[in-house]
Length: 102
Image (cartoon, rainbow, N blue to C red; front, side, top):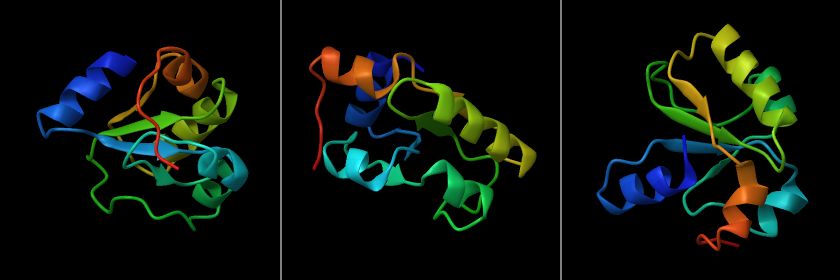
């Protein structure tokens, strides 16, 4: 999903769940408003707070992409069927000057 589309959908009240798989330090330094912090290892061990509805729309992000791609695969393996990646990830989000929450 493109960052601008995520911002637009948030403004109109139809945002997907944003899953940020970065470390705690990275997450605390700034994340997409409303994002759920779920490091990839917590998803793998089924310790992450994720929607119970496996058809829920999820957008996964990390700093550059590799952890998000891994998390997407794990989520698919666990039955989540509507999982996409944020284009440009957090680096792109920040570079575009989009809002951050700390």
